[in-house]
Amino acid sequence: MDRRDFLRSATLLPGAALMAREASAKTDAMKIHFLRHATFLLEAGGVKILVDPMLSSKDAMDPVGNAATTERIPMVDLPLDDKALQSLLQDLDAVAVTHTHRDHWDARAKELIAKDLPLICQPSDTEAMAAAGFKNLLPVEQSITFKGLKIYRTGGQHGTGEIGAKMGKVSGFVVEHNKHRIYISGDTIWCTEVADALKEHRPDFIVVNAGAAQFLQGDPITMSGNDVVTVCQQEPNATVIAVHMNTVNHCLLKRSDLQKIVDEKKLTRQCLIPRDGEVLSLA
Image (tube, rainbow, N blue to C red; front, side, top):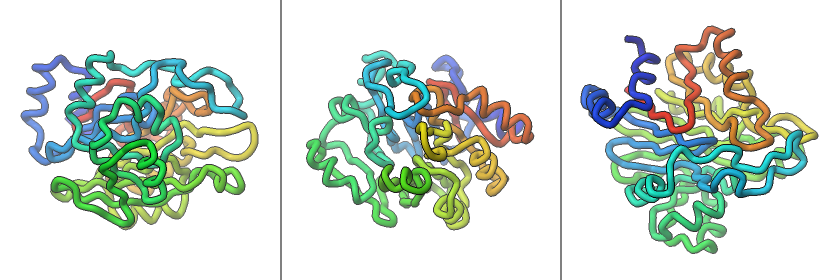
């Protein structure tokens, strides 16, 4: 069984089977429970962090404006019912928000997440989060230590030119546990900041926000298929996990599109494109 097959083997299994798989994994392994879009539960060293929670029900929000399609968002439901979602939220150690656009931090997340739960964020977002009632903010200027994890903040570019400037400041995070590192890129295109983060941290796992999100004018504001390929080629020994697709109307690159690109570039073993609800045990 190769690395990719192992990652897939822990996916969507019944409880007992999944527990058996995890029992055989290394004790310092990380785990991702991908929900949808950029929202996932990261577990590292027993610490559970919910990343970029968009928790609204299907069609609850207006579509992103000035886009090629006008479907309401999210375009798909969470792969959890309300009871399972509440259980997940009650078992968290922290939430991490890369930036406060509503597809990463929506009104329902603000409503459902406990106001005293540690909230990891970029410094520029603390004022808005405090105004929303959150009391336990952990802004990351360069790095912090949280429950045995080392968390670093990285930069990015949420598009190019005037549109990129209007999209505001965005961050990514590198989470380190027992020398294993996962890099969560956040909403960024391939850029110098991403290249620098890869060079500095040499992550074992890289979560990239794909989807090639785009307005009627300008270039993509999240990673295109070519950007994802570049990340893979830049870090050939890392497993790349591509998310941020099939959920928001301005994300024009679909999972099926990216899968064709990955297959053509012979990167199938390196680049994973998880389904909503999929669990990945990262060895």
